[in-house]
Amino acid sequence: MSDVAMRSSAAAGTEASAAAPRKPFRLSRGALAALPVGVTLALGFLAPLATVAAYAFATPKTFDVFRSFTFANFAAVFDPSNTVWTSFVWSIGLAAATAALLAVIAYPIAWGLTRVFGRYAGFVSVLFVFPLFVSENVRLYGWTLFFLKNGVLDGTLKLIGLSGPEVLYTPGMILFGMLYVYLPFMLFPMTLGLAMVPRDLVEAARDLGASRLMIWREVELPLAMPGILIGLLLTFVLAVGAVAESKVLGGQSVIVITHDIEIAFTFAQNWPLGSALALLLTAIVSALSLVALSKLDLDRILGRR
Image 1 (spheres, helix red, strand yellow):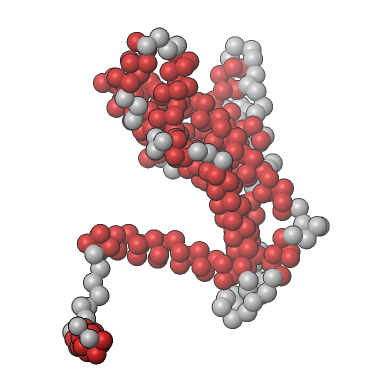
Image 2 (cartoon, helix red, strand yellow; image 1 turned 180 degrees about the vertical axis):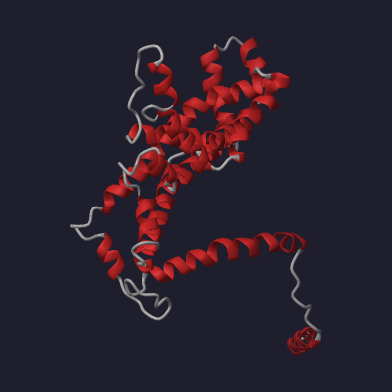
């Protein structure tokens, strides 16, 4: 075939493809199924976050959102005379301590739910779920009445000539309240992770002479790690945003960053400053979570290699 004929054929094919009607754009079935979730996330998460980010750059003590742009709010936060950084330290420190301690406390319970309690595991799970049906503030005030001077504990001990410990309104009591409130959020992901460990694999390791510690380190812990990681991250993120524990049980002896944000949005009526604090807290928590995940070999933990 000559060059002229080949060019004519190619030109004809191009004209035919150009003349052919284009198919209308259609979403795949998977995209259509995910569309409600995507819209919900956009409206419930991205839109409020974008609004907070816009307010963070607004003029201080105004509501000129989307009409002004300034770094004055961040300059106020980073001012050396401002001690708001201590609130960040308290919030992150208490959240990290809560996540670490709950990992130790919840693991035996989760192991019992999957290996020991058997048919009673559902009943035990209900015992941990039931407090979630009661308001957090009501439960915390219940602990206040329990530890209060002349309260339940102190009044009972006075009947036998003793007195109750003065533990209210201390950082330790705040940590206790956070451990109590966030235990279910660590327990159930960890229980799910331990439930993913095949029992026949544990039995095979035992038959091959592995000790109980070796089985836990080499078999159970790596296979249960996805659930443990979810529990750690969920607990840490929720605990960073805790404020009721420091108010009710701590008596504001410790000021956490969420309390400063609440004050900025309510009594101070300084929404731009509150938005700047909230944006910084979101950035810090996101960075810490990403750094923690980057230090872990997720491929090995998830069994991909």
